[in-house]
Length: 416
Ligand code: EPU
Image (tube, rainbow, N blue to C red; front, side):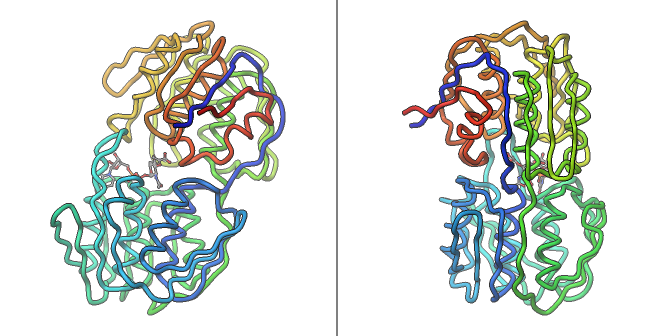
């Protein structure tokens, strides 16, 4: 199994370009299920999660072609509206096929995702919303069996803010009869990007990006072309790495306006940040100052950036409080960071991180995608060698990670 070997202690210097956003590309690929016409995408990242989604859609009879960052999907006929446990267990985002399949085929069979390393992650809000639109959903042998003649528009007030829940219901409502109001909707930029793609396909959607989304259902949707938005979490990860290791890094092909909370915290840590249309430059000339963060739904500080900021805090000057409010078990990286010499104590959903002068390289284990990114950052600032085991987690969500870090002068290599 592949591992990542990092020789730390060098500042980062150079330029890298940001890839398309995984968490926008995944729901947008599922939107192809809503139409018999072709959906042409660009800026699709080359990631394991994208391959998994391709496999899942192909099993249902969707024709998927891809070359470089382009992808075309055509769901002319859907032969089997089923998402099996085998694929859903490897990627929870598979649940995003539920709404589109139900809207297009009138039925769907989707495996329950089960728990995962970062928490329980139930899908009750997806189910509740579809039921409000008239679907009957039963759970048998670990599968959700959903059926509906034609979904009906409804007013749905979500109990909590859920990103894929909002996306699933928005896609289902696009083909429902009548108007759907999604209240307490997620405001994440990925929801907005999906809405843009659906609108290009002929959907009538207003308010995406706010907490009330209004969708007027249409009979059918057509084909469209869409460019996937830049990955704000990948962008934030390279910025946090530069803040921790020091140096000067420019990221191109980015969407700075989706990173306000993250940029604000990096400035608080002492980084100089210059933003231009589509690019962000960070310069860090001194040891970072400790900054506390509290995760929250967008536009708050992203839970997907929490591990990277914990890594930054381990070498900062002072004590930082890192509070996780979205997932109940997203501190697995703290134990691994301690193996590198970090001073962290966990009190409930807060990690108290006392910055140390330096970390020391060791072998550590990746537990989930963003935890792995935090460990890479820690490895870059640690003295000596750090080996990260189970890096398949990183391949799920970071395109060409070692090449991009190498372009910044870091010594990061994949070993067997
Ligand atoms: N929740 C429920 N019931 C539901 C849905 C969610 O209780 O029906 C809870 C979850 O358990 C969690 C909270 O609501 O405590 C928020 O979860 P959300 O549904 O927003 O998460 P998600 O849609 O499953 C997406 C991203 C995650 C990211 C979260 C939060 C995708 C494919 N995934 O997950 O990304 O952490 O939103 O922003 O968009 C990652 O990329 O590494 C990743 C985990």
